[in-house]
Each structure stands twice: as C-alpha cells, then as structure tokens.
Image (cartoon, rainbow, N blue to C red; front, side, top):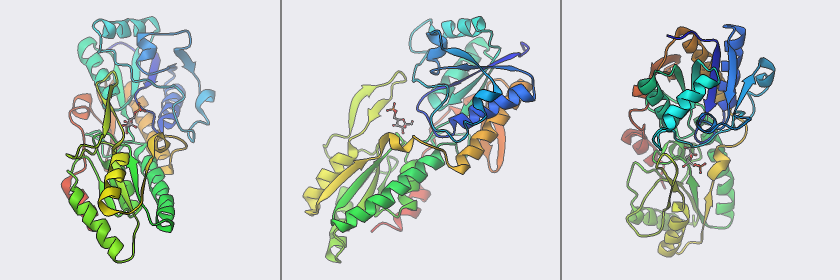
Length: 349
Ligand code: F6P
C-alpha cells in the first residue's frame, strides 16, 4: 500500500444537493486530523482523462468552510466514462500519478462508482467511494444524500400544483425524475397525497386510471394530480422518451407526462395539463437531513482513506455509517419494492 500524502476528490454524474457537504467534510478532516493535502479534481473523470489548466486545484479549509448549504458541486461534474474508449483508463491512472494523487475519493452514483471499482480492480488505484444520487437507486446503502431534498422539492411543487388544478378543474400530470427507479415519485406521491402515483417498477393500467378520474368527476371532483416517474412506459404508443444516450449508455428520459396528459384528456374529457419538474429537483440548498448525511459520509470517507480501506464505499446502514465493497455497491439497481407501492395504492382516488 502506497503511503498517502495527497488525496484527490471528484464528483461525477448528475449533481445532488449535499455534494458540497461531502467535499467540505473530506477536506477538513483530511487536513485538520490527518495532515494530508487535498486536491479537488474538477469535472469528474473528465478532469483526469482530459485535464485542462484548471482541472486539479488544491483545496484548503478556507475554500470549503461555508459551502455546506450550497447546492450543486464546487468541483463541477460530468458524465465522462473513461472505460468507453480503449486506453482511456490508463490515461486516468497516468494522470493521477502526474498530479501526485496517492488516494482518490470518488463521489457519485453507480456510473462513477463503477469506474472507481474498475480502476481499483484493474490498476490497484487507491480509491474510496461515496454514494450520491437523488434517485436513491444505489444498493448497499439505505439511502444517499440528495434524495431527501429531491423528494421535499417535488412534494412542495405538487402541493402548489394541486391548488391550481383544483381551481381550474384540471388533471395535472407531474413528471418526476428518477430514471428506472421510482423512489422520488413514490416519496413525493405519498407525501403530497397525489391521486395517482406511477412508478417504472409497476406497469400502469390506463383503464383503471381513467375510471378513477371519471369516478372523481361523478362525485364533483373534476380535477386531480398524477405523479408519474420519467421512466414509466405504457404499452400505448404515445412517445415516452428520446433515444439520445450519454457515455454510460443511458437514454435521456422525458415525455411521459405530456403523453399521459394528452391520453387522459381524451379518455376522461377533463381538461389536463402537464408539468415536468426536471432539474428543479436537483438544484438549490440541501435539506438538514442531507447536510447531516453528506457530512457523515465525508468524515467516514476521509477515515477510510486513513485506514487504507481501498475499493470500499461509505454507506448508511440503519443509523451507522459503515464501509461496504464497491462490488456490492454497484451490483444492482435498488428499486421500489412491491409492498411499498401497494401501501401507497391505498390512497389512490
Ligand atoms: O440520475 C440523476 C438524474 O437526475 C435522473 O433522475 C435523470 O434521469 C438524469 O439524472 C438527468 O440527467 P441530465 O442532468 O444529464 O439530463
């Protein structure tokens, strides 16, 4: 195990409220408690694959002291995949050496952590992972920072949308992020008491949804809210997504809300609108829960570097922050279990 004196840190993938909390905690603990130097690597893996003059910058305590409340990531982010083209992973390893980085804290979701795991497996890079995703779809950890904030934002948005839906006697379909996991929609649908919540894990029944709104109209409630995950697909042929893919092969989702709103208008005769919450759910200041979790993750990640826990990721298990292997962390997508969705269905109508 090579001795550590300079710790690099990067954030990859979509930003999530709480990233700056991790950056702050890793930096302060590494410097104050362990005497390491900390280098911020900007723009995720791109900063190591294709470095520009500003890609690697020293981070000091004064750079991070007040960033806990700030959304986004001080280190910037990208969806660059150094395993997309042959020879790129080797370039990353070479640049780590050139920048004198002996240990790396990689903060990201399954894509970023998947790269971290491969760099550790293939080249022995001394890496520690930290989970980040608003989607809450990472296995091996109970939750991640960013999710609580995203659910809170979506809930508040739906609460606001409800009052206008009711005033105008409209159905408003609210499209929520989360890719192929319905966690944000499930949480916001429950917390905002949406009339119907649709997630990718459960095939939607358009007939049943139509009946539900017709029944509501019969009892004088010609309005309603549908919370729909961007990853929901219908067998009906309205467009639900584009084919554009990122470097990790993910399609860019979007459009299901609009398609569903059109379909419901036709079937129920009730005026409909749709709203795409989009990046609103990822922006702005983190909730207190996410500030606390991200800080605990950052402190534990710095400790993992000190302990030489390479190839591990920090994770929340119950009330403890522990480390688990990156293998386990990236093994499968965590989706909403059936019983949780059924619990929500009690409130449909
Ligand atoms: O993974 C986080 C996430 O916000 C997903 O919920 C969403 O599908 C995707 O990122 C959007 O990515 P981008 O910001 O690249 O459009």
